[in-house]
Amino acid sequence: MYTLNCKGKLLVIEKPLVMGIINATPDSFYNQHLHNKSNTILALAEKMISEGAAILDIGGQSTKPLSERITAEEEIQRVLPVIQLLHEKYPEIILSIDTYHSKVAVAAVNAGASIVNDISAGNIDEEMIATVAALQVPYICMHMKGTPENMQQNASYENVVQEVFGFFIKKIADCTAAGIKDIIVDPGFGFGKTIAHNFTLVKNLTVFEMLQKPILAGISRKAAIYKTLDITAREALNGTTVLNTIALLNGASIVRVHDVKEANEAIQLLDSYAKA
Image 1 (cartoon, rainbow, N blue to C red):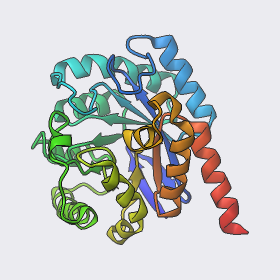
Image 2 (spheres, rainbow, N blue to C red):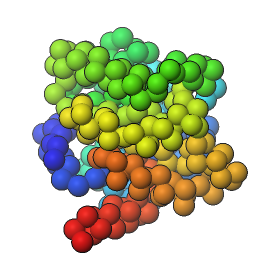
Image 3 (cartoon, rainbow, N blue to C red):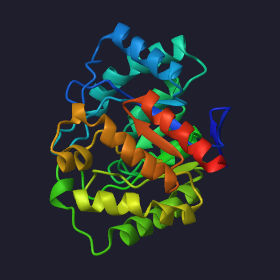
Image 4 (cartoon, helix red, strand yellow):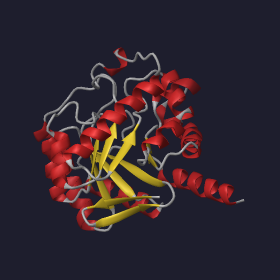
């Protein structure tokens, strides 16, 4: 069991939790058409909450392979209205900001977010780790080799599990030294990994339990699924559920998904299976 202090709200992980993805971007690889449409955002958030999402993760920067960076200021313009809207409408839900800019993290937390989800683990913005420590919120620390612009050109490892594990040993030490109390580790499925690397990480996810931190699995509708099955991201819900189930069996504490209902059903069935 893990407990995360989200600006005074305790998020207790007694069984796996679902994080719902809300993209405030016009160019996400799986676009839910939310950009600047408050009614659509509210409808999706309400649906995710009713289906059992414990966290809503808001992102304004596409991080798909070869995506182009936008400035922190432009990202703030995208995410702040969404965070303010959701925080006002659903004050009890935990909101996460998906960003690698420390300026965005500060603005988002001040607007109502209470978790920072950084795909770069502080490697893009060197101020991020100190900023999160000062904000006193949980930090999702993700492994990515390279940057979104070049990560798929850098997808080379002698042993992907050992290298990602070693990365987290160092990052957890850095985060702890800076004063971050609640750290979540994310192996970074799809970020600087081949399809084979992604399956190896899912298969060996139990290794990361040795870090004694919650493990986040974010593999929803990603290329490892739809390219393996020769389908599109829109057709990848069943494949997502299969890999989420494997990740949950192998120790995932949080699954980050586009489809909350199906993820929660997997958690419920696995809970009954474990009790049988």
